[in-house]
View 1 (cartoon, rainbow over the protein chains, first blue to last red):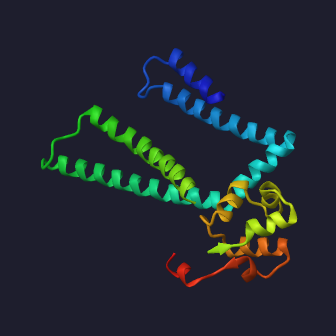
View 2 (cartoon, chains in turn green, blue; view 1 turned 120 degrees about the horizontal axis):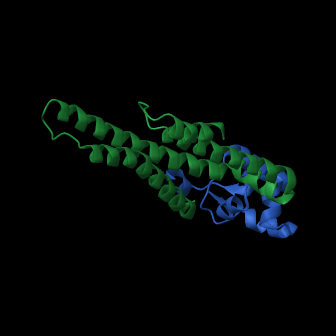
Length: 132
Length: 69
């Protein structure tokens, strides 16, 4: 909450910053979301006995852990491959062997580095759930 | 690895959920085990055998066909 308020405050009060203060607010929103999810989980564990048992069983369940690990491993592999590809492209572009990446292409690459591994994780998890 | 989980669970009149709670896994894991789609860890296999009060090799039946899995 403090980060969100700081980001909004900086955006309104400080006109000439070397960075966009909305980044601070964005980080605050992310942390706020994480905090709320932790609070929700704690509330469920304390007040909903049946749901808490199901939640804990699901978290500790060895098959679910295996599915998460397999999905995570594949997502990491794709993430590493994309990062390597981006790094190679940037390196060769720097010495003129490949065309330089535009700002949009950089943005797309970075977005892809976040979104593609996440999609791989989801698809892998769902596919393995059918399989195992 | 084939197993006698469904047979023994039915004999005792337990639901999949009951058995899952007894051994600390999800109901989906019991379903996968009964369908033979998932092979448990050695610890879970021991916990299951312990619940039924039988040796592990009476619950899980290893055959030569399982060798390549």
